[in-house]
Image 1: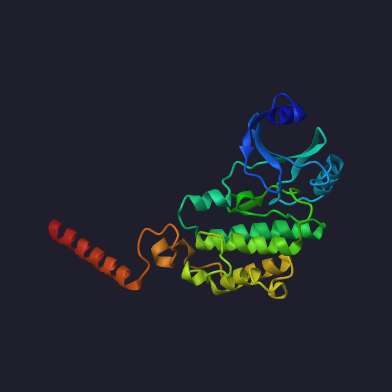
Image 2 (image 1 turned 120 degrees about the vertical axis):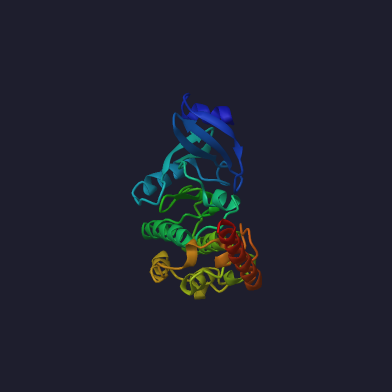
Length: 272
């Protein structure tokens, strides 16, 4: 299959090994010069889209422009199987960021959610849905994020995209995806503003009717999140349990602070 992908895309393309895939498709990392791409080869129709269907989807996406969207590059036909090529930004994904273990500042998590919500709003206004939004296709860039892997599923919906946005927001703040039912965010991160906490849990509400109805509604609520909050504090101060290097209990924090004062006093006396 790698040889067939390389032949379909051109001889100057380097095709890597198989990557984890969804829905019976096969995914490959590819490179042409300095540009990286994700190549997804779908099952033959009717299990997957026809090459003609996929070309139509790519043409429709080209009319959808937003700075936070990485649009599909083009579609190809590999022996009757539809093949989609999408540019992969060089930036780390949200999944890779979480795997590093350090807590993500609340302010940065909020900016990422805003950019993803803006991208979804643009998609939904043009009659599209992402359909496979997850931590591994949200790429974190300076000041925000961009979204890739559009068009991998044709049966996506607005409701599924918004629920995925809630899962991403929960993971960015808690350090892991939510369980069912989700543990309250406050148990993971006490510094999360109340407005953001309510929004994340509303997006994950089992009752679809109680969730935000649109990406625009999510953006409106994100705009009400205070711009100043203790998101830049050390993890043991803002209550983050993921990546924290110190215990979160108040008693232990007071003890550590007291020890710090005694150490400073000792150093001063030693120099006197």
